Length: 192
Image (cartoon, rainbow, N blue to C red; front, top):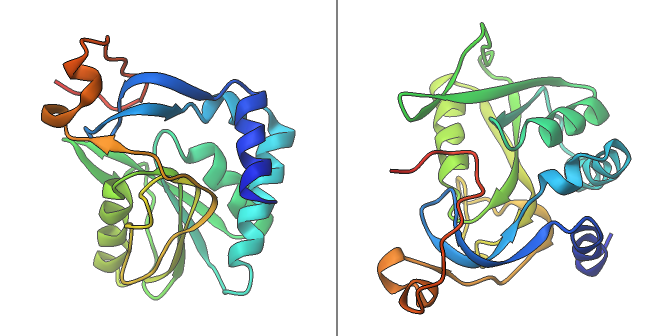
């Protein structure tokens, strides 16, 4: 699928929002991808997961690892298509960790699947979990890469279905704040 086709899916599902948003990264943006409006449809989710799986299929993968909560549905579906184990990491004391008895076996080949990458902070935390477990990072895949081609993980670029060149702003330099536009916080992570 092309960038345009993926973008059209977001538009058809009313999942491409414009306004003034606080992203999970702490940055502000005029564009927000409400991917749950897309992932609520199993047929679309499966189609997108198949596209991601095609991008990484040449690699041997033992485990797909995703951050909770946003990437669980997509990561699970990719693991199902790749016929491998699926794990998710959750925040505990503001740090991603494996819970619920999940473990990454040593030397296991791990694919990290994320929903949206802006700065890559959550993925970097998962990379540390993979390294700490003495597993091997095979790659990173995501639905949307809005990092402006800046995200790298162990020198690897993420494989994405949609690349968007969307400007993000530090809160102190946000033009929407300066205009007095109301800030919306649609993400799942709490900010103070």
